Length: 126
Image 1 (cartoon, rainbow, N blue to C red):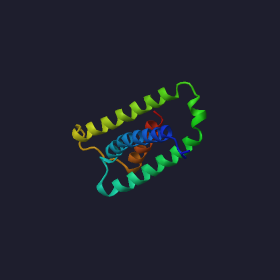
Image 2 (cartoon, one colour; image 1 turned 90 degrees about the horizontal axis):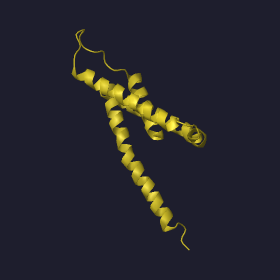
Image 3 (cartoon, rainbow, N blue to C red; image 1 turned 135 degrees about the vertical axis):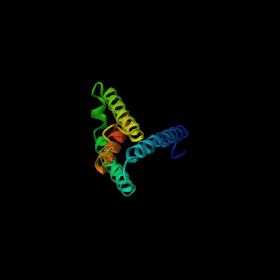
Image 4 (tube, rainbow, N blue to C red; image 1 turned 180 degrees about the vertical axis):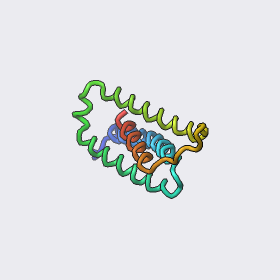
């Protein structure tokens, strides 16, 4: 009698492959979020942003069952993700065009970290 059945092992493998595949979008979001930062602030923004997102994921993990019983939560997460994507797209477009008032101020470390956290949390629930 095996410790783990083949069906359970196959289900675990599917979950792992899906998680690895979906992790790629997090890398893209992090890259977009730190794009406008000076080089010396990129590494701290990535580390602190991922740490903040991890803490939030742990907190949400403790409340997952209760949160998913709320009607419309998945829709709200999707709308939040669309908003984050729009803000990042707008930031990228601004970076390539200079407005009449001159150069844009550089992106702040806090703003980049906040973008990483919001995007990661909204993508983890959607």
